[in-house]
Amino acid sequence: MKRKKINVAVTGLNAIDSPGPGVPVIRALKESKLYDVRIIGLSYETLEPGIYMHDLVDKTYQIPFPSTGKAALLTRLKYIHEKEKIDVLIPNFDAELYNFITLADTLKKEMKIKTFLPTLEQFEERHKANLSEYGRKHGIKVPYGKMIFSTAEIPALKDEFTYPLVVKGKFYDASIAYTPEQAATYFNKISAKWGLPIIIQEMVYGQEVNVTAIGDGKGNVIGAVPMRKQYITDKGKAWSGISLDDKNLLDMTKKLFKGCKWRGGMELEIIKTNEGDYYLLEINPRFPAWVYLAVGCGQNHPEALVSLALGEDVKPFKKYDVGKLFVRYSYDLIVELEEFEKISTLGEL
Image: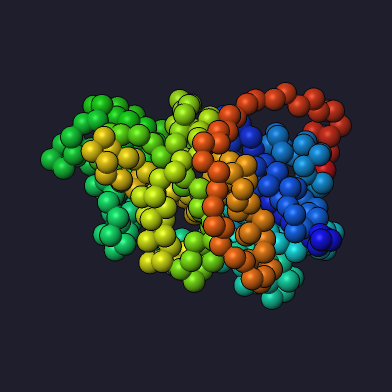
């Protein structure tokens, strides 16, 4: 079958110790059986490794940080689109999704750039700050949590929580605090980076398991692969993991997607307790950095996302390989200074 040629723009090109999903998403698309994909990388910083991975990324453009606002982003995307004729755009960072979701209709109508993103309501509803209510709505166990806006609220936490407890940022970062003093330290550190509110969450003990999944926006799960973390970094990121045969995780995913009619990629972060209970810790509204494991298990979720964005009929995956491992590794890229200068001064490479 002849593959269809398309141009896909992808963000999340950082591949550091807390990697973005962009590079694995690109690897998945490069292995697509349906599409011959030219990749347009969209970077925020000049040292994102994906910029210099020329076997994966065909051309890179810098885009303004999410805090700059959607008007600046739209202006930049218009310039890039004039040069590259983007067919599909896949954002991969939580912090940038609000801008891309609110621009999705404009991109489609004015430039014919397709996306397949959650609705703004879906995106806002699953925020960490709203997770307890979200769990009640969909009948899924969630650790008790609350938002705080000041370190002055920390002493009173002892009335609702038992230490240790988890201190979380609204987009990223989580640390375990064993004392009020540690909670205050983490509050200041995380809020300085990601802003307020800070989420305080009950500590639940057990095994960390995750699911990468994709929904069609009508309540159906197109694909889902569960994984158990085998090696975890000091930032809590999976550096290796193994695909699982766990019906409970798949049933939880189906129940959630049916209830919220999720549109696009999603990662569920879950704790399985020793008693066999499953607690939903977080919903990440995009593919995880380990999404390439799904490809290795026989489900190419990024390819399916492109098909959904293009309005194609996409059949759900029926199976995946169990017992497949991913092992992440670091790799030194040798980059010419001229390339770094070019992306730094011109904003494209």
